[in-house]
Length: 257
Image 1 (cartoon, rainbow, N blue to C red):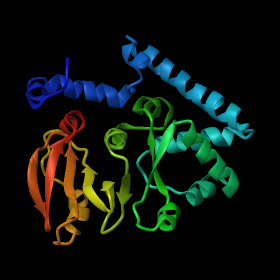
Image 2 (spheres, rainbow, N blue to C red; image 1 turned 60 degrees about the vertical axis):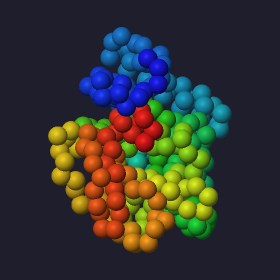
Image 3 (spheres, helix red, strand yellow; image 1 turned 180 degrees about the vertical axis):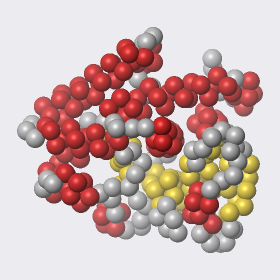
Image 4 (cartoon, helix red, strand yellow; image 1 turned 90 degrees about the vertical axis):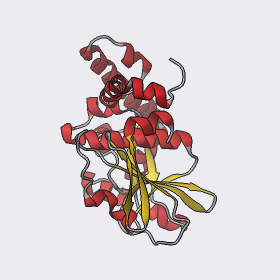
């Protein structure tokens, strides 16, 4: 098929959107993608999760409390893209601080999940602020987690996260004037601020909550490019002093915008 160009994107937009929907549902593991039936896809995804849990975490780290480890992994997969912390997880599962830190570290080391830190010029403040978990594969989340149709927005954000961490060395989230899903840092400054808005494809009335963090930016230059990743809406709009590029998700992911 070759590289995706704007012309190819325009010509194959409907098919590309269907492929993205399949990706959000079943992920991108090659063997899963090539399975012909939905049952076979789900069985393989379940097998992948069990292998990661027992071979890469339980056996390697000699975990004895497998029930709490499993519950913690499923909880994090269910709550991708939502801020959490070691203290919150410790309270939720009534386990010690050391055990919680050990289990989270083991889960991250297995690559089942990754952790996005809050941006701060103070490393200590960033580490204390908690993190947002993201899954290595959305198919695993849909197969294992307690999810519903309302979780499609979190899955879409997970896809944007996967794209950004492949393309950039330093990616964070922000909490200055309202949470910003992603911030790309280069050198000493933020060069991109990215929100992810999931809604009906025909909807163009952007909720205030999606633009609040952009509106809070000062008028001074140097705050970075502002991007709102949408389902299908494309425009450049003003949000306070900021100019926000609204970019359809498939275009953002495929064309590297």
